[in-house]
Image (cartoon, rainbow, N blue to C red; front, top):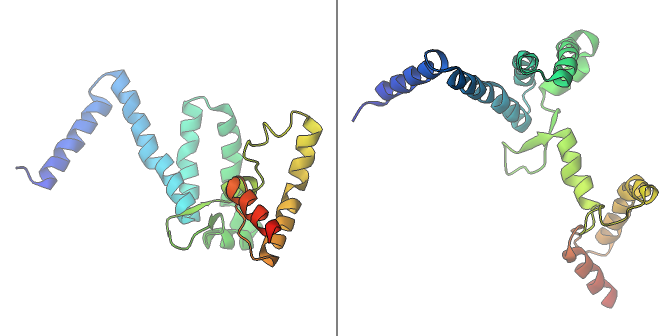
Length: 189
């Protein structure tokens, strides 16, 4: 049975063969694997750990790939984004300090140290999820004005429902039957 170091050498040699000495198709797919391993997984790790320097490094590594694969919008917007974020120390050092402390992502559960998520995704997971109906807003109404009014007031409605549930000692879980059941039980008391 070969040693681990020896088998690692064989794997490395085979991967180099696929990258350089084989067909254009295998070289293309190996470049894709390199991008996923080096950049995409780095961005995922950054969002889970909140590391600002790794975020900037991953963005910097991603920009040439966006140009190479003709992703015009990513190329157009990532370049000034990277320039602005690397210049934060001069323009806004307080924000850079906060980002370096991990505030660019949110820790929802303390039991999972690798469970941070980006701020925009936090909104989706918390507020948007709690304001949805069982049929989602698509079956809520087809009228644009009604849906718009719903989204403008949903946050305040959620606050009122949360306050009422806390005052009456009930547990709310919007978006499913458990919420309706707890409200009905409380009305029957």
